[in-house]
Amino acid sequence: MPARSTNAIRNFTEKDFSSLALLGRFRAVLAGVLDKGEVVTHRSFADSKRRLAIGDYLSLFLLGLFNPVARTLRGIVQASGLPEVRQKAGVPKVSLGSFSDAQDVVDPALLELVFASLAEQLPETGELAPALRLERWLARDSSLFAALPRMAWALYGGGRDGFLNNAVRLHVSFDLLKDAPASVQITPGKKCERATLRAEIEIKPGGAYVGDRYFGEDYGFFGHLSARGCPYLIRLLDRGAEPAVEEEIALSATDAQNGVLRQAWVRLGSARSRSERLRFIWVRGDNGEILHLATNRRPEELSAADAALLYKKRWQVEYFFRWVKCLLGCGHWLAESPRGVAIQLYLALIGAMLLQLDLGRRPSKRVWELLQWHLVGMLDDATLAQELSRQLTAEERQRAQKKQRAAK
Image (cartoon, rainbow, N blue to C red; front, side, top):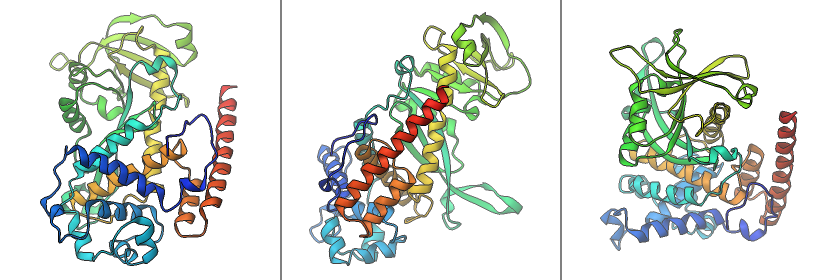
């Protein structure tokens, strides 16, 4: 089904949801990636004796993430024994041993390519002002997902009363224009966010990044981003000291109207460790707090007013993390090895993008519940199509009313 624009709600049809159409679309994208041969699959998948193909394994795993009934590996395996599940999902009956072992021979790099293919298909939302569309602004952040104590590879650090925390960290470069992740990395919880981004732009330079205060703790990081051709807008920690101002920059009337108090060219840090020359912007936030923003963009490239608006849009990535955790059940691990966890998180993100392509936006909790009622057989295809159209139309109306109130 083609991607829908976020600016209009179309009526759905039964064909959009019959026979678990989402799994079919996932298999089609997976087959396209496999045909390119960019990732070499494990030699065991070429063995004629193997009954569980790579597409079958990943489809069953994805079905387990979406289905509200099967919440364990054993539950997914048991479901594969049901004739209707096999027919609709197009999978064979599998054993617990073969399903468990598959995570050791499936390369997460394959799902990374599937993820990238879907990310390219997502339409732009139109939520950013025209001036902010000149760069591909990515909100960079990460979130921790609690791991089980026996997942020792995910050791995070000292916890309360000497207990140890285990966590998996999901690093996301979130495309603010598409309202969706553009790239992700999955690491143990203790992995540094700056180091992960540094490694990514070493391989693939470019991209414009919006970051929170953690990225502003290391002043040398600003120069590294500039050297790799990366525009940035990063919030700084308030260290209680004014920066060394080299040149004041005049504000426009629009800047002042958007809460900008001052801007100047500065260098941060001490004489022994100084940052590159950057633009420092003082902005009054909605709650009265003074925000300190740093950017390597000149005023004619990114006005102070647009910088303030852009940083406000960074919160889209926070909403995304909350959505993933609440609606897709991430943190309830169906696999516990580093490779298995990567497979699960990639599949969750792939599922999220497939839904966004179908619906024109990430589903709300009410929409997600409708989809799950359909999966357990309480809604037929026709009723689901009608209810989705009704719910999405109501949500679009609420969004428009909220924007009108905010504009007053």
